[in-house]
Image (cartoon, rainbow, N blue to C red; front, side, top):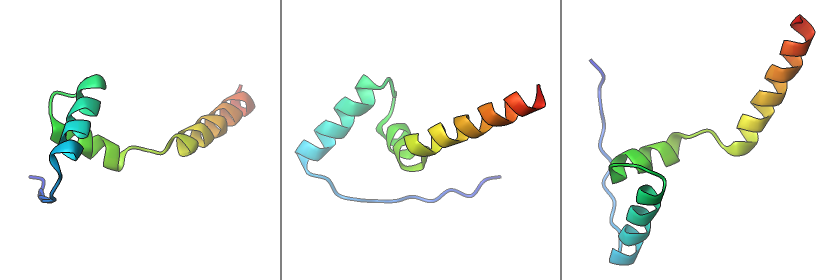
Length: 62
């Protein structure tokens, strides 16, 4: 079984509203899922670099 941890933090009403709207716009059903994904997602520059490496390796193996 996975061990889970909790993080507690305080927000102003305005900050909470911004987070709720962003989560809703991006199709998330919960704020926690949105925050989790935002915190651990791969930065776009890293994704682009990984795609370039994959494409180069794919061309070499063909």
